[in-house]
Image (cartoon, rainbow, N blue to C red; front, top):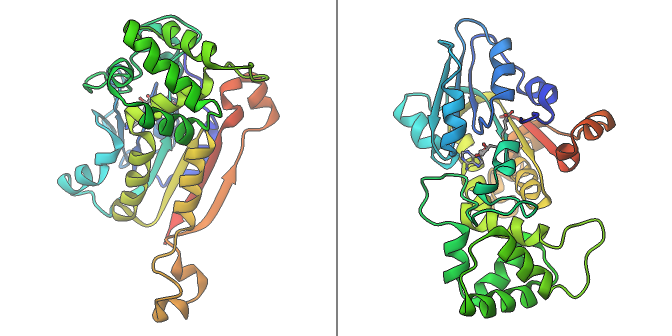
Length: 302
Ligand SMILES: C[S@@+](CC[C@H](N)C(=O)[O-])C[C@H]1O[C@@H](n2cnc3c(N)ncnc32)[C@H](O)[C@@H]1O
């Protein structure tokens, strides 16, 4: 089961207008989508997307004329809006980033270091490149870079060396194969964290290109959101949150080199106003430990 994080807060931040057009960019198990549908009127529409085929099959069970779901990476949203004559017409979009609980719980998806299964980690099962292939083919320098950049792993070099050494003896096929390699290379165990946490996060981000698609998708909202349209993003780690925060505060032009923009009131230099940050309260973090690292950021397109 998937418990939606910051559900009421995220929907409140969308400030739903009855007959508006909304996008749920990360359908998952539809917790947020179902709440959006409750607040939409008969003239409203909700367009939902997920790159996981299993999530999309779940979505197809929703029988509602106002609801549409498609298997797609959210990086393609602008193209989809253009093709469907919806560019500049969207009233609000929600991104609830990361993994759903069913993805994490299924040992055969390979996302969890606590369960032994195939080293897969593809959010989109139709994508060719899995974590297994990545670990077999990536050179040491790149592995070190990924573990440092996407996992902030202090033992990146030692782990990468052990990956290269181990794969020369036998293929790294399962999550436990990788966990053992990480544990062997870690001189002491980090407090309150499984030693594989950072490496698993890093490889997952790399093979799904999570940060690149997030940056591109956020940029594309400037094209398909209408004026006063709402952007709401829930992120689960600091790398994602930094991207969202920077994007919401990004200015339209380069202040120092653009004399026209320099003299406009501050609001006109930004793409978004009413920028807000919300974190789960104590009750939510107690009931749903997955929400502990969640940060919601929202803004209104100017
Ligand atoms: C945290 S879950 C969403 C949960 C959902 N809000 C709910 O209430 O059930 C994140 C979902 O986003 C999907 N996802 C992640 N990155 C994506 C991307 N680039 N394009 C499309 N879907 C993506 C994942 O497959 C996963 O199903």
